Image (cartoon, rainbow, N blue to C red; front, side, top):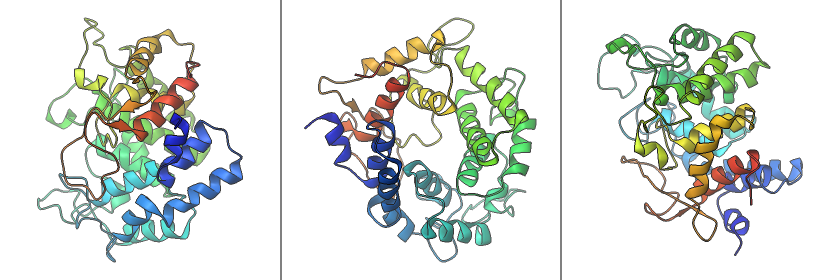
Length: 311
């Protein structure tokens, strides 16, 4: 079985992206496959788990992956069609009923905020902007807040309230993905575009994984690929964002990171699941650590195709 056939022998959430990004199927064929996410497989299973009060897992956010925040992220990454009746219904329940205090178990001033109003940490709010913009919610107020929180070095850090003065990759990638989704939703914004470019430069000046000061690898875990990666950063996630943002592939600062992606391909042309983040989840989409990963293979192949390094 070829790698493409193996990828297509999967859930609709993967198949439609393979058709769009790797095999160049006609738009109508891609759309028909994408529509199946709402009624079949992983997407349908997650949608069925939403409670009448809009919550998944009994909470807006929790310390595992079963809550509303993380389920909506997965549905977005699956590519659930925002225009589908199922997506509109699910998002309407969240907008009407879910606040950040739901299931929190702790007291914070933002607990009364509606879900799409966000909370305090830019790493979380970036993800909320991404989800909200994707599903057609007006995220302008939360975007304005994030723009005001951009640090002088170009990125963001959710630990600023605890004294951090420089950015972090983890927070920055979450905010960048959110701002890109917002830019697409509103048809482009000069101010948001400038903020994104500064954030992208923060990553690129460090070649997506090295300290600017010493050239050392910032975190070896960033060289291992996971899905779902949740809020965690890794090199493949950074490259896939830059691909989606349409960054110039001639930028030599991408080269080393692209080489890392190429180096993880196994002799069968697939990429392994190198890291699984602990925590309860509604779905087990792939095998154990070290097993071939359709999600990582899909994302690695489209990144390499974008960079002109495809097989």
